[in-house]
Length: 337
Image (cartoon, rainbow, N blue to C red; front, top):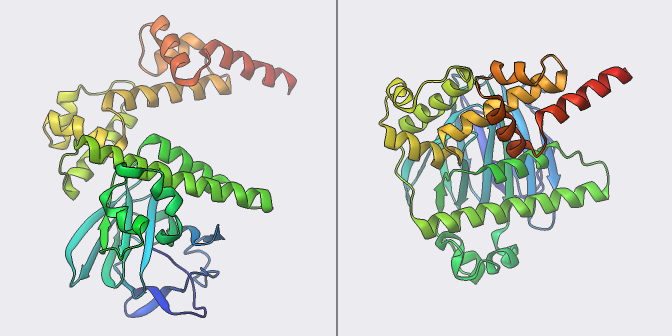
């Protein structure tokens, strides 16, 4: 999705609420936003030729239903940083679909003409969209050779592409690139170049992930309801990290069998439930140490570990530094102050 106000050029995207235009984008220039400032905090950045970045936070959107319409061919990769939403689109050439958009997936689309409905499920929704001219990125596509996903081959070969709209899972490597891309302020030419590089890296990593999934073919079908349950499982682990449920207990709580929970969790979040729990615990422990509010043993017990040696080993493997070193750094900073 691209958002913005009216500028010269042909209409390529429009979002409406109750029959009134609320977000409109024309051409590829991606103008400044004219929406009420408390509703959206947008950021547009022209990148290298053929690519544009948009990021923004929509507020007070839960319970509303937005209609959207695309009139001009566009290739978009959209990421959700916070919040959940459902996207339904309708086109005579594409079967109607309902897709759950969440922080664990992205939506990849190439649409020439389509209409649909966007239903946010949370009051605040933060999104990032990279819009590109896919025919201008032949070096990216050619770099994958025979491993290039079939859906991108027309762009590499200069052929007309069929329309598509799908939502693959993203892995932690993509999430890290996305985070650095959003946090990078554009204050000068060097910063803008760094943003361009990160955007291309994002495209390359996503294509590589799709290529790997195509080779292994190990994805399992997940409905929107399955996705919601898997997200609920992650929330339970993050809230109950001190005394987490077993895998079988977690599966019963969310209403999935253990197989679908394990495979689905890895497919959605790029890690296992156990590994995610470990990361949550260690991140909490690091927070305790960095503030100096707990010593190493206290932080170990606080996050649910009973073995100090095991905790220290896992901590160093996760962060590349021992918890004792983190605590020492925190104490030095405190003494200086």
